[in-house]
Image 1 (cartoon, rainbow, N blue to C red):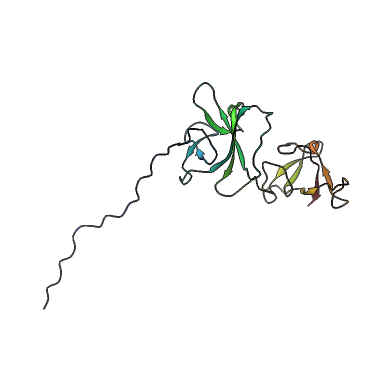
Image 2 (image 1 turned 90 degrees about the horizontal axis):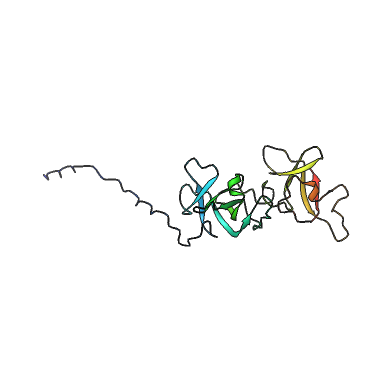
Length: 201
């Protein structure tokens, strides 16, 4: 009769993942093309900082970085897939990046066109943000029946949808389509002269 093997003593140590290395900016340019970023966990409203693209807190990636003095009136030239624009400020110290919804990042030394790492993507046609283009939806606002871009699928029900450009004869696809010019919009970001054709929903 064989003798039972003695029971194993002690407890197994669970395997642990190696600690994540600190982020290092190899290009030395704040918000360079291809860099990813996330919100700053402190009392700095709107500010963001670079981090690894696979970091748990990363929220977006830079598509384009422009170096020029910026103001509220600066024309922002971004790729079509841009979801948002970050301002780069320099107030005598290190450069900082943050949302242009905050004044300190509007008047600065450049901007970064960025795209969210995950949906939603307001810069896509119908997404409700950035460039005004075919496929976007509009909501009537203001005393002069001007229009503001809104998501085609969201809490605010849109009134119009941009369906195309004028043809060679200056006409829209349908007689009841509405021609929209720069004066038709409360915000004309991305609208440099073309007249769009919109259709009531």
